[in-house]
Length: 119
Image 1: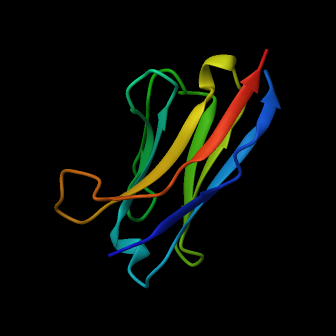
Image 2: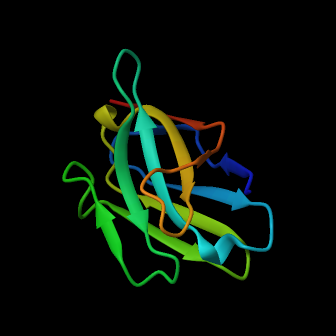
Image 3: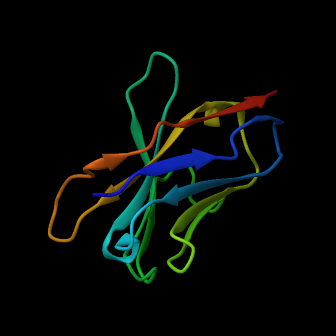
């Protein structure tokens, strides 16, 4: 089992940058693929980005491709989301999630961190 705690969300102007962090507990962090998701008010939660256990495979939602970068540091049990060229439509609560090996679903979720982009 893994516990996840996100941080780094805040109010930022359009065009600005933020880096979100997600710290994981436990000694098996490197066993989990990690993902970032977001949920805007009145909308369903949506996929943002994912990274494989060793960091070799990355995937992004079309809406953030070229602007956001997911990365991980297995020595620090942390996954990051670097967000550049932020837009008001990026405003949402951002969640990190962990997926165990051979699992289809993300079983573990953090509590979320609020990102607000002002125009």
